[in-house]
Length: 570
Ligand code: HAS
Ligand code: CU1
Image 1: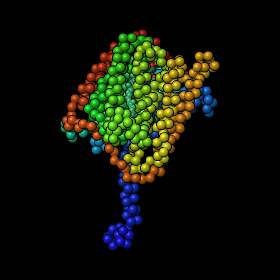
Image 2: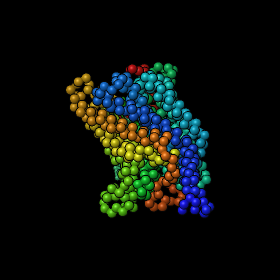
Image 3: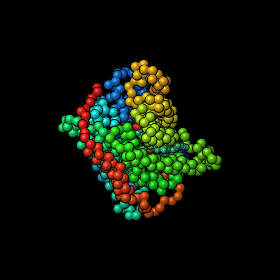
Image 4: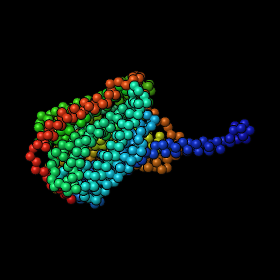
C-alpha cells in the first residue's frame, strides 16, 4: 500500500508508523532498564572488578615466568595478587550473585521484598569494596585473598571486607523476606526452582559467614586496631576455613541455578528433572560446611581423626555435583533430541555452540569435570600432602571458581544484557569467540600448573627460577606455557569487556526479549514437598557443623597458646 493509499484508508504513513514503532521500542527498552536498575548496578560493579583483576592476572602470570613486566618486583607482585584474588574471587562473584538473585526474585516472584534494604546493602558493599581495594593498592595490606595471620593488613582492609559481608547479609535478608512473602501469598505452592536455588545459596552463605564473623570480630579487627598484640594463626585459620570451604558453594550454586534453570532453555531443551535439582540444592545445605579441615590437613593441633571426619564429609559433598553432571547432561540431550538427533552422541552436535551463552556454560561444565576430579585428589589426605601449597592448587581453583563459575557468569552477561537493558549485543563475533579463548587459555594455564605443582613448584610464587636452582629448571617450559595461557585469558577478558561496555553504552535499542526459564520434562508437583523444608535442612546442617567443629575448636582454645605478632613483609 502506498502512503497516500494508507492515509486514505485511515492508517498512519509508513515512515511515521515505523518511527512510532521505533519510539515505542525505545521507550519499552528504557523502561526495562529502569525496572532493572538495582540488578544492573550490581552487574556493573562485578564487571568493573573483573576488568581490574584481569589486568593484574596477566601481569602476574608473566612475572612468574620471569618476564620483565613494568614495575616488576616482589612487593608489587604480592599487592597485585592480593587485589586479583579479592577482586575476582570476592567482589566479582558476590556482586554478580546478588544481582542474579535479585533478578530471579523479581522475575519469578513478581517482586522483591524490602527493596530499600537491597539498595542500602549495595551501597554498604560498594563502600566496603572501595575501602578494601584502597587498603590493598596502598600497599599496607598485602595479605592475599585468604588473609591468614600472622600476615597483617591495615584495619581498613578487614573493615572493608566486613562491610562487603554486611552488604551480602542484607541481600540474604531480602531473599528470605521475599520467599516468606511468596509462601504467605501462595500457601502450599512450591517456590520456583530458581528461588529454591538462590535461597539455598543464601542459607549456606549465612552458615559460612558465621565463621568469618567470629574470625573478623574477635581476632582480626581487634588485632589490627592494636587492641591486642598477638593472634593465634591456627585458630584464625580454622574459623577461616569454616567459612572458606562453603564459600566455594556460595560461588558454585548460583552457577548451578543458571545451569538448571536457564541453560536447558537456551539450548532448546527441557530441564531433565526439577525434583532432582531441588534435592541437589538441599544436599548442599546439609553437607557443605562441616568439611573445612580438608584445607588444614597440614596444620598441627587438629587431630587426625577429625581430619578424617572432614574427609568423609568432603567425599559426600562431591555427590550432588555428580548428580548435577548427570542432570545437566541429560537436559542437554533432550535439547539435541528435540532437534532431531537419534544416535548415541549426535545430540552434542545439535547444541547451539555458536551461542555465546551456551558455549560459555558448556565449556565451563567441561572444565569443571576436570576441576572437580582434581578436588577429589585434594581431598585425599595422603595425596593432599603432595599437592598442598603447590601450583596444583592454583590450577584447581582456576578450573573451578575461575572457569566453572566465572565463565558461567560471563556467558550469562551476554544473555542478560539485551533482556535488562533492551540493547542488542555489540561485536557478536567477539562474544562468540570469547568463551573458546577462555577455555583454551585456561587449559594452558591450569593444566600446566597441575603438572608443575606435582613437580613441587610452590603456589604464590613471584618468580619460578629460584635464582637458577636446578630443581626449578624442569618447571621452566611449562611455566612459559602457563604464562601464554595467561595472555590468552587476558585477550578473552578484553573481548568480554569490549562487548559488554559497547553494548551497555552504544548497543542498538531493541525490544527486550522475555526472561524465560527452563521447563522440566515431567510436570513438577503442585504442592510443597520435603525438599522445601528449609528449616529442617538448616537444623540438620547446624547439628553436623557442631559435630564437626565443636570439639576441635574447644580443644584449640583450651591449648596453651603463644600467639604471634603481626608481619608486614613489604
Ligand atoms: Fe576445591 C582448594 C576439594 C570444588 C575452589 N578449592 C580449593 C581452593 C579454591 C577451591 C579456591 O579437599 C583454594 C583455596 C586456597 O586458596 O587455599 N574442591 C574440592 C572438592 C570439590 C571442590 C572435593 N573447589 C571446588 C569448587 C570451587 C573450589 C566448586 C569453587 C567454585 N578444594 C578441595 C580441597 C582443597 C581445595 C581439598 C584444599 C587443597 C589444599 O591442600 O590447599 C568438589 O566439590 C568437586 C565436585 C565436582 C565434580 C565435577 C562434576 C562435574 C560437573 C559438570 C559435568 C558436565 C559436563 C558437561 C562434563 C565431581 C557438574 C559436558 C557435556 C557437554 C555436552 C557440554
Ligand atoms: Cu574446600
